[in-house]
Image (cartoon, one colour):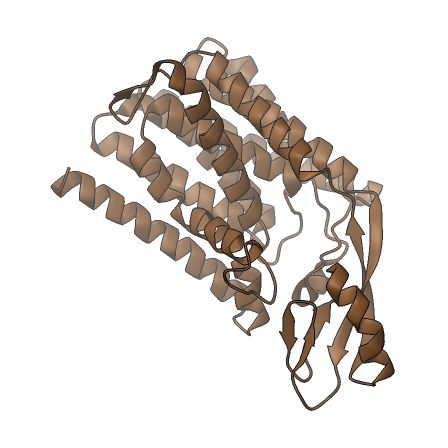
Length: 356
């Protein structure tokens, strides 16, 4: 592809995503398929359409029709499409309410313990864990907490089922046979587990970070643009087209998803971006820079795993919700995460220029 062809590819992706997002948003509003956040700081967003990632599937289908002769674009698009279908099934299952959980506020003048949390006076928390549910009635009788609201919890597939589906997505990419070397190493039969692990990590990183307006789309967009710059600066122009697609999808969606968002991507969208980014990095063989560029979501996953392993304790998971819980504004968190991603990308490019 020459520069003109790549510009056309980017513009087609960008404009198609803007149009399809607008169209899908209208349909979702009429169907009343909307988000109902469980984080107390975000309850004002109830009613915002979710599953906006369906628009990505339309855009990707268009690109497959136009660029089916371009093998890297075809393979990455196919994996993104498959990822989006898995994410959409997850979203559809989530439309069914599993249970209603209480939201309580500490009305006493002292810090109380509820479940694993230490609740400060005046602080609101969701009664989520079995331990918290067993303790809340006694606290209510003692007058130390009051119920201030309720929130529906969506039905979700079992973790094992999710992991199996994500492994299948990685297996799809591995079976194409395009990933034979990575970071200077011949993979051979190890290509299968390496690809699966990469896809699993990328999906869960992007999915976890998708919790604030424009956060996931902005981070993946910045990382993808940085990969394009990386390819241009270091004579690897062949990697640019697939990352232009990711960039165009993210920027097009941000037209509606930036703060304050009028639509959310849902698991449909986060699975598209997660599988797409992993596939692009693997197919283009830029693992070191690709991982560094996605460093912010990866760190967020590590923090959440430490929380789940009871090594550290967060009042709410993941990390960006904890920051919001402690008073950092959503806009400031988003800009901080975007800025940290850009900084990591700049560091990676400078390191490549002068150190490696």
